[in-house]
Image (tube, rainbow, N blue to C red; front, top):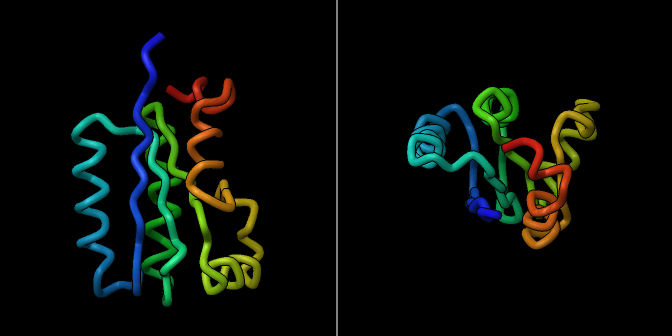
Length: 114
């Protein structure tokens, strides 16, 4: 059985309307290269605004249509408190670390997406 690659990318600093285009371009490049199982590590995310949240929600909806999924690992305290405040904590599949996210994709549940 072919083992599909899991792409792990760290988002550092700020994810806002000023830099979301750059981040979107980087993720689009992964998708164009056939990568469909994407983990966004948010451990070093210091700021996120509505543009950043919108981007994450777009990726969460877009990848399943392509046979994949985006999950989040190592959520920063800021990200966790932001989505908790918005009552959006059930929107994203969140893992405590990269290894747990990778294990999800290697599981039967994660494999069914591809």
